[in-house]
Length: 153
Image (cartoon, rainbow, N blue to C red; front, side, top):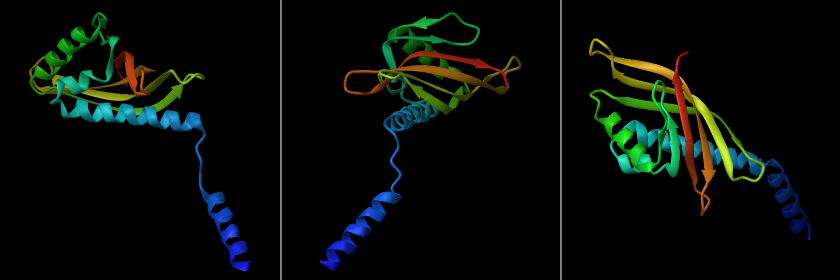
């Protein structure tokens, strides 16, 4: 009987040391991780289809200084043309996330950097910030539905 009591006390002590994130924190962490995964794929810059797969079919992107681009085919074309620019590189880092009360929408914000040829042909890196709006699709996968970024400090 004494071994039983010791086992129960040990289990309670271990259980008391485990940190359990509230569901909303887990969802935010999952969304940030999804954004990080996308950033890693985009930074590699090799797989257009994989990069585009993070957007919904009805997504709209808002590049700085350009008109909005709507829909998967137009976004794919934009990505292909961007990756074809000599020296082009993109990277971003999510800094925060939020999830709607019903868990169907969320957003991430963070910092980005895009490297492109400057006016003199030498590569320049433009730092900026971004916001992405995500929608939880059938099956629970987060997909980006609105993507907007700017340049500046």
